[in-house]
Length: 117
Image (cartoon, rainbow, N blue to C red; front, side, top):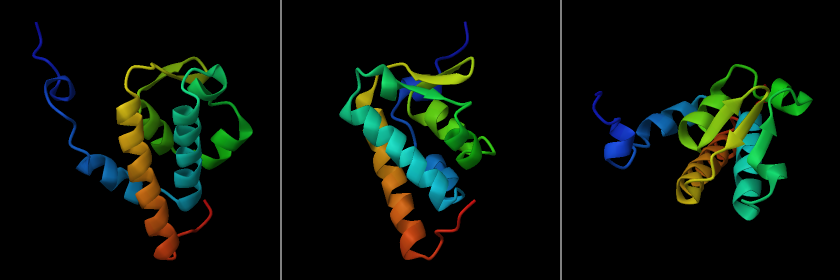
């Protein structure tokens, strides 16, 4: 059998997530922050645990796939058809990701990186 994944064996190293977030535009970061904040506020609500990837706002803001990478790779979402669905297994991890996204938003806004696109 294959060895356990590093993520399963130990706490995740968030430095690669910080690097990824630093490459995202302010609009992408703000939308990610909104999704994660809403999820944490209402973790049992299907309205916040499912994100439609065919939604106009998602498609126009998240073009490029990095937003999906953050949600699926780090915040516990899985792709199911034209939706991302939260597995619901680790709210603490979602909070860690949300906090890093919030820091990245502040960094873009303070650094003048609030470009649209």
